Length: 317
Ligand code: SAM
Image (cartoon, rainbow, N blue to C red):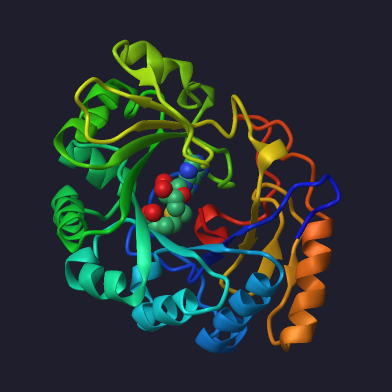
C-alpha cells in the first residue's frame, strides 16, 4: 500500500470502542460518549475482516486502542483472531492499564506482543485530576500485572503538559531505572474541541532533554520516537513530537474508528467508511483512503486546532 507520496503504509491502528473507564481532560469530555447503537459500531467479525483485507494489502502491524480497548467484553477474542490473520506479524495494545490485573495473562496468551500504557503523573492527586475518575494505585497494579505477564515490550506514554507534569520529567524518566520499560513523552495535541489548555501547556520536547542532561541518544527502533537512555537504565526514554518535529513524511499509519471510518491522517477531517462492506468493498475503500493520505497534518498549537473532527477517544490515540 504505497500512497501518492510514496509512503508505504504498513501499520493499522484500530479504535475498538469510544468508551473509556477514565475521562482524561485532554482526550474526552467529562460526560463520556453519547450512546450509539451496536449496529452503528464495527462488530468483531467486521474488525477481523478489515484486518484480513488490510493484511492482504500490506499491513503487518496492528495496534488495538480506543477509548479503552480493555472495556470491550470480547477483547481477548478480538486479539486472538487479529493475531491469527495471515500476514499480521505484530499485535500491540494501547491501554490505561486499569484492567490489566484481570486481563494481562489472557491478552499475552491471545498473541498481544507489546503494550503501551498511559501514565501522565506519579502523583496520586494529579492522577485523579487529569483522569477525572482514576486512582494511581489502579495503574500501578496494572503495570505490575503487565510486567509479570512477560510481554515482549512495555512502553509507558506520558502526555507532557506545561504547568501540569513538566515538573515530573525526572521522576517519570526514572521509571526506566526501576523497570524494563521505555518511558515516552508525547507532546500535547490540540485535538479536543473544549479542552482547558492554553499555549503554555504545549511544551516542546527540548524541555525534556534540558531536564535529563545525562540522557544519551540511542539507535532508532523503527518507531516515531527519538530515543535516549539514562546511564544504567533498563529501558529507553522516547520523545514523540507530533507538533515541534512532525513525522508526517515518514508516516506509515492508517486508522480505523470504532464506527468503521478509515482515517488516513489523525488530524485531517477525511474519512472513508468501511462499515457493513464485504471484503471487496473494504479493499476498494482502503485503497482510496491510502491514496488520499494527506502530505502532513498542518500547523498545530493552542490556536491552530486539529481538524480531526472527533475527540481522540473516538479516533484512537
Ligand atoms: N485508553 C487507552 C489509553 O489510555 O492509553 C487508549 C486510548 S488513548 C486515546 C491513547 C493515547 O492517546 C494515550 O496515551 C493518551 O494519553 C493519548 N492522547 C489522548 N489525547 C491526547 C492529546 N490531546 N495529545 C496527546 N496525546 C493524547
